[in-house]
Image 1 (cartoon, rainbow, N blue to C red):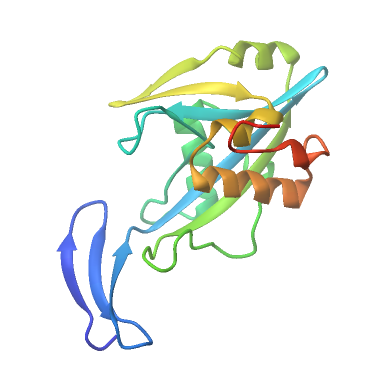
Image 2: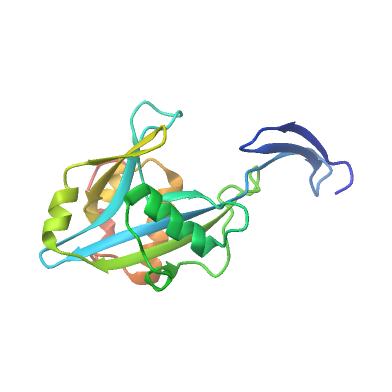
Length: 193
C-alpha cells in the first residue's frame, strides 16, 4: 500500500502506519493468526466447558478462557488447535474430534488489528468422575506460564469470563452446535440472571 511504513517491530507483533480509504493515517498492528478451541465435556449427570484460568497483564483478576494460542510457522489452523489443546490441557485429540465453527477466519478488531482467529469446538462424552475432578482447579505449568484447568458449567461461562474473544467463541459454539441448556435469556455477563 502506498504511503505505508513500519513504525515498530517486536518478536510478538509489528506496528505499521498506513493510509485508510478516507486518506487518514491509521495504525495497524500485525500479530499473526490464532486458534481457540471450545471443549464441551458431557457426562451422564453433568456437563461443563473445560476452560483455562490464567493471569493476564491487563487485569488483576484471572481470566477464564477457552484453550487458545498463536499459529506457528508452517502450521495449519487445525494442527495449531490440536497442539494448543495438548499444551494447555494435556488432552491429545484427533483431527476428526474438532469442528471448525466459521467458514473463514474472523478479525477480532479489524479497525486496529490485522490478527485473525480460527474458532474450533470439541464435544466429548466423558465419565462424570472426570468432570468432578476438574471441578477443582488443576494447575498446569507451561514453561514460565501457569494455567489452571477448570470445568465450568455452561450456565456460568459468560458470567465468569471478561475476555471478549471467549464470549464470542462461546456464542459461536451455541449458534453452531446449540446451547447446552435452552434458555439463554438467563445469561448475563454482569452476574444477574
